[in-house]
Image 1 (cartoon, rainbow, N blue to C red):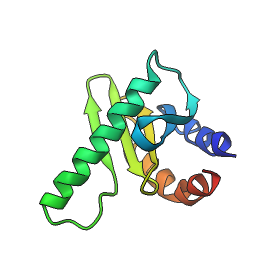
Image 2 (tube, rainbow, N blue to C red; image 1 turned 180 degrees about the vertical axis):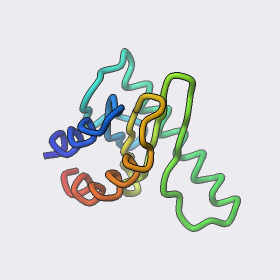
Image 3 (cartoon, one colour; image 1 turned 90 degrees about the horizontal axis):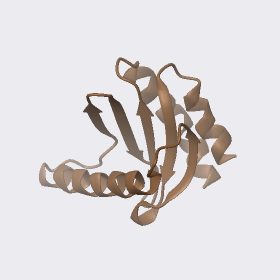
Image 4 (cartoon, helix red, strand yellow; image 1 turned 90 degrees about the vertical axis):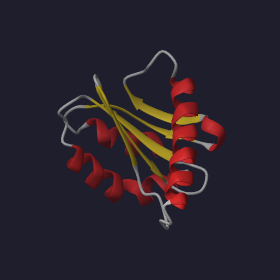
Length: 115
């Protein structure tokens, strides 16, 4: 069920991969393009989310809803699903980020239920 839900993101133009990152950065499920070191990616997404949450706390914000990283070759969006899981999406440049964000919000409960 989890992989099927992740595969929905691959129907969006420009999306290369979707994955669920577990506690301490372990990869629980992947859909789409495989990268040489997905485990390293999971660890870095987990660390980035922790650092971003700390920054949000310093800014007196209640809850971190998403991190967005734009690099020369693409974009990474990551959103916490609960206290232990993160959904990460990797997309090409010039992808409709608003559409991805919409699908993230729409499918969040289904992904969390499948964990």
